[in-house]
Image (cartoon, rainbow, N blue to C red; front, top):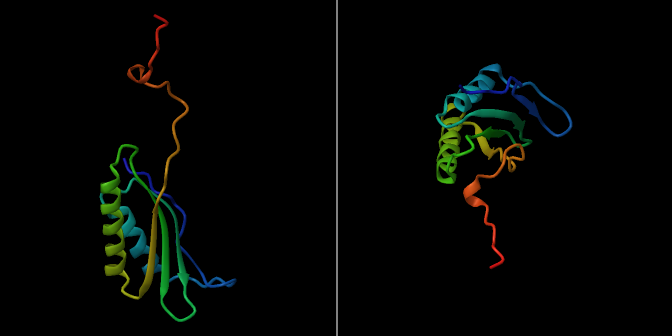
Length: 118
């Protein structure tokens, strides 16, 4: 099952925030959620640029065993989907969420080496 964040897409420009068109916010969210390989959607922000246009930033989660080449392919697909949905976007920054090493499990026994004294 896919787990997606419920936070709303927001917009900021300098120190003053301006609302994002709800249709644009929904288009971004649909691209992110609808892209195969994306397991979670973290923070998504639409920045309005001073000279016009927008910058979209997003954080996406992937499965623990997802190969890096697959993550890169999904990020490329997400960027293309956002550009197709919102041609006015001037920049897109999409980052994968990186999971730290798990501390709640024991290492597999085939990785433990015990040296003898003989």
